[in-house]
Structures are given as structure tokens and as C-alpha cells.
Length: 355
Image (cartoon, rainbow, N blue to C red; front, top):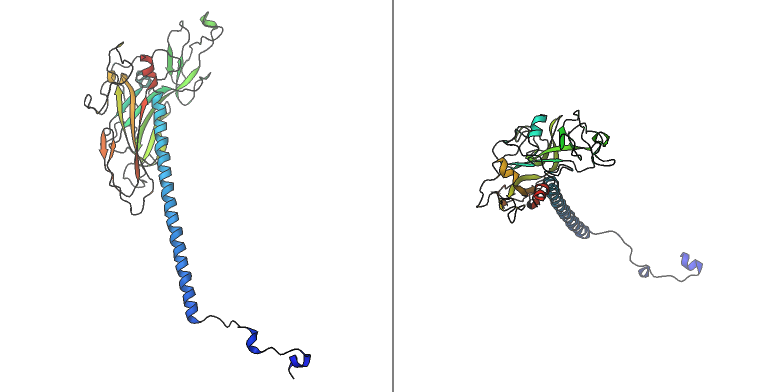
């Protein structure tokens, strides 16, 4: 007999046992797979779009950071052009145009000390001998100044050095020499300059000759278009020292650089003396750069123009914009996003001495 009957339990009809799962039909399986594929494709597209958007944001952030950093690096050096430590009166400017600023000869560095700034308009070839990998048609600027750090007791071994006298009894108001030179000027700190033989030695500061230019590649030694060139335009800085004139990358992605120079045309003592009256490439002065030593002595401010671009390409993007960089306009094109920067920088030391 049935176990339910034998046990005395009531018999439950089969229909009340409930539905037993027997699997999916082919149609149900195909619908489920189709829905899964649609969800997968949607998530894939979402992740892809998010990744592209994040990549473009990263590119834009790097571009902005690079442009601002380049402006800051150039601006800081130009603001300090003509700084000679405690020297109250600037060295006399050269009577003739200085030799190549790339020269590491002490005599050439001494001859040009009185010219805080020198600039060169862009050309088809490098305007100076040391500009390896020069990007044609981009501007070049040379800055001369002393270090703003506290003067040291000894000369820096890898730089030209300047020592400024604080005592009227010294034979010279300053000495500019190689590290092995004789630095024998005195300071007016206690016990003072009298007698001179008892006065303490004046501090010694590194003297900088810095050249800024645009290279076609991160490695400035690689010529534009040469085999192995990475094609990344880069702001380079050359330090002219007794050991050589070597370039160091400052920041990459800087595609173009131009300058306008503000000159003081007022006579000594006239109203407005000590402030720029006219900028280059204006109707009053159409040259891209000052052309004589006298004009460079009157440069009291600089307009810096930079064009920064993404280092990496942007897919289907094509740049059709025309960028105005002071004296020049250009339409570089290509799959790179760009941004132009401009800043006016006062050359504090020459301007301050005229006020």
C-alpha cells in the first residue's frame, strides 16, 4: 500500500505539489542572451566614452599646467634681468653689439653684463650657434642676472660668479670672474670698511646667462625632422657657464614663443621716464625686436606670447584656428588641441633704477 496510507497520513493530490522547474526554452535563452549582449554593449560604450573623456581632460590639464609653468619660468627670469645683487648702479652697457651670447669666454660674458636682455626674432635658421634643434620662426630671449640667493663665502664651481663691493675703498665696485678667479672685495658689515684691511670679505653669487628657445624635440640635440626625432616641441633653457652652454628641457608641449618689448623713449627726468612708451610691432616701432644696444637699454617690459599644445593627438579632431601671438599669426593645424597664453612682465631692475 501507499506509504501515506500506511503511515496514516492524508494523501496530497499530485496537482498540489507545485510547479517543478524543468529549464529554459530556446526562445527564452535567446532573449536572455540578447538582453545580456545589449547590456554588455551599453556598458562597453559607457566605459569607452568615459575613458576618452578622461583622457581629453588629462590632456587639457597637462596643456594648461605646461603653459602656465612656461610663463612662470620665463616671467621669473625676465623680472630679475639686470639684478646684480647689492650693486646700486648697473654696469655700463657695451658700446658695440656683444658677441654671440652662447660664448663661454669670460671676456664675452664680462662685455655683455650691462645688457640685461637680448632678444631675437624668429627666423628660418637658429639666430645663435648653441640652439640645437631650434624650431624655425620662434623667438629667442637672453637673460643676464645674478642669483637672488644669499651670497656665499666661496665661488660656485660650475658658474661664473659676481662679487659686489660694499666699501668705497675697493678698487672696483664689482668683480665678475670664473670660479678660479680672485675675489677680494669687501663688505661694510661690522667692523665696517675702515680700515679696509679689517673689513670682512663680500659675499659671492653665481651669475647667470640664460637663453630660452623652442626646440622641435624633447631632446634638443636632435635636429627638426631628423631620424629619431619625437616631434614634441619643448621650451629649452641654456645655461652659459665656464663648463659649456648646455640646454635643459623646461617643459614640453610649448609649440611657439614670441615677444614684444616695451621701450622707454622719454628723456631722463621727463614725465613718464621709467615706464615703457612703445612696444615693438606697433605703428611707432615696427621692428620685431630692438635693433641697437641703446634700444635694448630702454627695454623695461616684455610681452610674452606662448602657444601650448597637447603632446598627444586627439582622434578625429582637426585644429582650424588661427592664433595671434603678438608679432605673428599662425594656423598650425593638425590633430592637436592648443591654447595661447600672454603675459606682460616688468623688467624690475632697469625700470626701478629709473624711478
